[in-house]
Structures are given as structure tokens and as C-alpha cells.
Image (cartoon, rainbow, N blue to C red):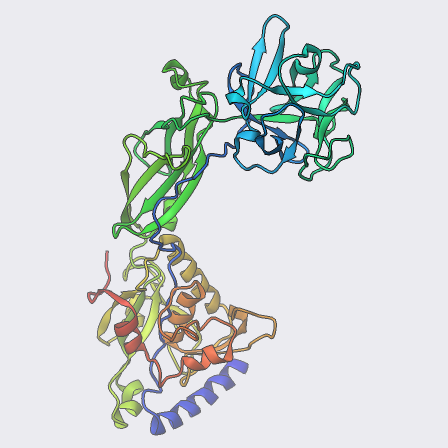
Length: 520
């Protein structure tokens, strides 16, 4: 009864409007949705410094490392890199400086390591030292750097505690371990066991601030190497490494461009996967392969070019061998998600024609792939109807087919499926027809979007425009009020019949795909 009364009331209103207002019986306008691929014009990023993300599983004698506290994430640091005895050592935020680099050298005569400060004669002079002033080692003693004169204070055991973490213990007393206090940065004068950010030795308890990770770093600007391996499918793969840090994984940057040369996707991945063939080829420890998944269903139909760069030091980021490569995305959706238009018809156009306006069109959204598919179109037929599915013959009837149109922005299969899912949801709601505006809705105070349950009445071109613009594909409107799906009275009012009608929607704001009746 509710629907019947509403339809009778709508019919009376439209008859009156046809006598006094042009084009009132016109069909819905289609909407515009922004592409789900943000087009940008930036050039490939080049890191000014390398920051390696993985920790080493073994310590290599002669290699240079950052030593990072597990509790705070801060780096072992020589105060301002001063090459002087008694310079305090504390933890500090990563700054890529030499004062945070240490060369680890193994001495077989003692079965121990010395931790050489790279800020001191490139690691050849001062080493990590315990300030014991002739006393035996005890909990709470500070650490600094000093020339190599005291074996008791300067030999260390680096012992794995699992998960890529180590405790660093004085060889002379392995019950003690290198410890950082708190999570703040240290200072030159804060040399006690309770000074913020200071590093000292204390009895090992297994706490996080007594565990450290080692990240191998370069002492020079060696050019990375690598290959873009197999032809891309949903997996983009290859390998990359640096010979100066042969057992450390480095990052690769993946850029995808469309046929217009626009940068549409960017991935950062770490080349840290194991491949036995890399070991056989002498490529470090073999953990230098990468594999990046790409969901091509989110890309519009096009041929894309893929560039991959190995990220080195100070912008030394070469493109991998066999890069770039191309990948072509094709669609199997036919015309699904595109807008379709036919003539409005004699009787529906009569009122407008008598007032001197041109004939208009009727709009819908192609639900299935082709015209021959069952229930091919979702549309609002007009007065006395709800949004419905129609087969092709019911939608076109005896009227002239005017064409299949798509948004001007590139649109992916994923977006087209979302648009039709939204149209199908609208079909299940109790939504009436409106002639004067594209859409009438209840605007909830807290809402930012008009949801399907909020839609009260809609026009045929409004159905198209709402479904497109809900997902960001802009059809009609100025920069402020173009989005008809926004919970705003101004946005809805902007889509008035005097501003936009179905024929103008198609011809001015969408791209024509074909004027032929879609078929298989």
C-alpha cells in the first residue's frame, strides 16, 4: 500500500511538472568515480643513506656494524665521534654517522672479539672499553673508547640469545653484559648506571635493554647488483645484493608506470629470501632474493612498464639487469559497470518538448557483461517504479540505443565490480523516483557519506552518478560539490535538473565506448 500510494502521488506530481517544466521526465544521470590508481609524476626515490632492516645471524670478523639496543631501538654511539680516550659511549637515535659504526674483529688467541670504533682512525685505534680504573670488573661500570692497552676491559664475548639478538659480555666476566639505561638518548656527561641513555655493564638478567642486534653497514659506496628475473605475473621477483655487505639484505624499489608514462604504483620490498642458486653463484649467504605480489585486478586495462632499483648508499641505486619489463592487463568483464543510454521516449519527453527543450535520454548501469546476458541492466525506470533489473530488450524497448559510456578516469575490474555491487544493494531498498533532482536522501548529522539506506528517491542518471561518485569517480560538478554521495545538502542540490540531465551526463562527462548495441 505504501508503494502504491507513493507511485500514485509521484505520477500526479510528474504530470504537473511536465506541463510547467522542461525535461522533468528525463532519466537518471551517471556519476563519476575517481580512479583507484592515484596518478603521480614523481621520479624514482633515491635513498640518501641505506638503512638495513634485517639483523645478521652470524658475526663476521672484520665487518662493520651498527649495534642496536633491543629495548630502545637506539644505536650504540661514540659521543660526537671524538677520537680521544675516555670519550663516553651511549645509545642514540640512528643518524647514519661514523660514530655509530663499529668494526668487529675476532682474536683467535683469546676466542674473543674487540669492538673497534670506526670514528677512531677508521677502526684501527680505539676500541670499546670498560672504565675499571685498575679494579676488577663489576656491575655498574661505565664504558667508553680507549686505545688498546687493557685486555681485561676490552675483550668481549658476543653470544646469541635467539631471534637475531645477542648479549655482549666481557670475556673476563661473562655474568656481566653491556646494558643501556632507559629509552632516551645519552650524553657525554651522563656516565652512571642511572644516567638517561647511558651504556655500561651490569649483571645479565635477560632484559631487553641487555640484548643487541647487529646490522652490517658499508664503509664505501659499492654499487648494488641484481636481476629482474621471471616475466611478471602476479609475482614480481628477482634478487639484489651488495658485495661490500655480502650477508646483509638490501631493499629494492619497484615502480609501475602506465602507457602514458604516469607512475601508478610503488612498492618497497627487502631482498631477504633464500635461494640456493645464489649461494652457488657466490652471492653472499643466499638470502638476497625478493618476491612482490601485485594484484593486477585493481589496475585498469593497459600495458604497464615495471622498473626495479637496488637501493644503495647516497643515491647509488642502479636499475636491475633485465629491468624494465612490461605486463598487460586485460579485462573479462565486458561492459559490466559501464553506463548505458537510450532515448527517453515520446511520452516521457512530451512535456519537455512542448516547452522547447531537446529530447533527453534514459540511463542505466550494465550489470552483466553483454546485452545478451539475463538481467543485463540495473536502472530506475521512472514514475511508479523502483530500481530494478531488466533484460536488454526491456531496457531498450523500441527506443534508439545511444551508447555505452565509461568514466573518464581509468577504472579497474575491481572498481567496476564494486560499482555494480552498490547498484544491486540500492535495488533492494524501498527507493522511489524523483524528477527534479538526481537524488533525495536523509542526511544523518554524523554521516560523511550517503549510504544506500539513506537514499529516499533517485533518478536514472542519479543512480549512475551516485554509484560512480560513491567510489570516487567524478562525473559532473564543480570542485566543491561534485560528489553526490557526500552527506551534504549542498552537494545534492548541485545535482539539479537545470544543471545536469542524462544526455549531457553521457556526452559531456563520460567517455563513449561504443554506439553499437553491446553483444557477445
